[in-house]
Image (cartoon, rainbow, N blue to C red):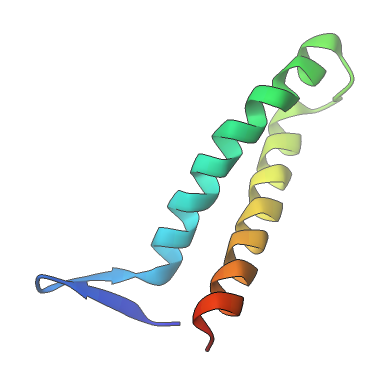
Length: 69
C-alpha cells in the first residue's frame, strides 16, 4: 500500500489501519467485556488479541476495496 506524506513526515498506511482497528476494537470491547466477566470467555487476553487481529484484517480489506492496490 505504501505511505502517506504529511508535511515531510512519511506515515505508513498500515499504521493508520492499526489505529482505526484499535478504535473499533475499543468500541466492540464494550460489548465483549461482560462476556469475560461472566466467565463465558476462558482466556480473555487471547480472545482480545484474536478479536483485534480479526478487526485489523477487516479494516485492511476495507482499505483495499476503497483505495485499491
